Amino acid sequence: MLLLLLFVQSSLNFRHIGDLIKVNILYLIKENLYINGMAATTHLRALQALELAIRKGSLKAAAEELVITPAALGQRIRALEDYLGFDLLVRGRSGIRPTRELEAAQAHLSAGFRELQTVSQLLDFQRVHEVHISADTDWAELWLKPRLARYRKDNTNTQFCINGVGDVPVRLGQADCEIWFSESRDDTAEDLLFHDYLLPVSSPGNTKRISKLPIDDRLEGFPLLHLDCYSRSPGSIGWPEWINRHGYRKTAPGRGIRYRQVVQALEAIYSNAGFIVCGLALVQEQINEGKLSLPFPITQGEWSEYAYRVTFRESALRRSQIGQFREWLLAEANMTRQQLSQMIGD
Image 1 (tube, one colour):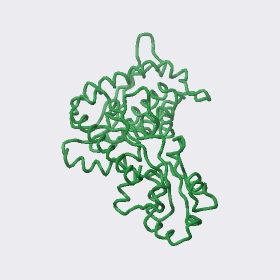
Image 2 (cartoon, one colour):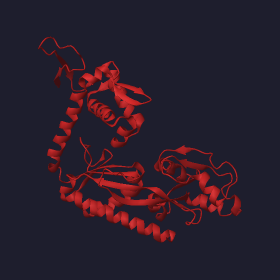
Image 3 (spheres, one colour):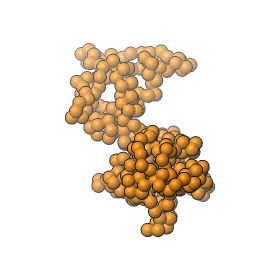
Image 4 (spheres, one colour):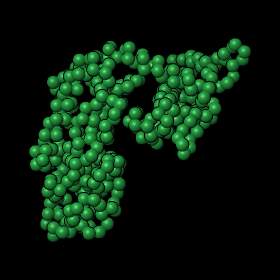
């Protein structure tokens, strides 16, 4: 199939001739929708990343809103720069700012995404059976996923898209709700889901192995795996802090492989490759199923200062299935809080 693509030259190209606008006509076959090695479908994501980075003032803040890593966001922008043949951002110690080339198009870029947001909102009510969620990856995979399977049984007509993946395609604009692990955001209407309780976790096999060792040296010689996802939380504990308080090992408590996410580290735990300090709420289902175990007394843990929190778009809550999902989510989170308190004895 032959496709005719009209490219109206934008202000990025600076080649207006009087009152005329130069128009490029490209003939492409359906099987070859690539221009200079960059897929046409990726332009919009790259422009979205660029607009957010400028508006937020940093790649990190933009990446957090899109629930991707700053490196992934930077790759999207660099791909667009490679396609255009010039830089779009100046990166410095004080942050980022648009280059001269981008300044000429910046107002149009911002206006374009504002219009897309308006379109998304206007069409939103036509997607009455969809719930779009932007969430902390570990929380979505370990806490939400097993519970969502139960929710689906009673709500068979509701379809989900979580972090861009699911029953329905990702859409432009904001998600219906956002879940994050951090402190409270003063500028948003949010609900507290739960604080997590950090403590050592292992495979049942490793728990059995160390139970036969002298109590003072039970962790000596065993690999300790470390998580970076809790390091931003004030007062959070990792292996060095936990061992300093409770013992069980005398050497190198900070040595070992580091993981950015709990999901990644658990693959190693399932293979008997070591021990990890992580949140009990996230792995409660796996413990109940016998996939994981607690190698030390449950009282030897600490509550996280950060908590999992959720905010729903005000316009999304006008749809009945969003309100229903919110009520269910808060009820499940309340149940988690109660279960943790009962298990720990608080």
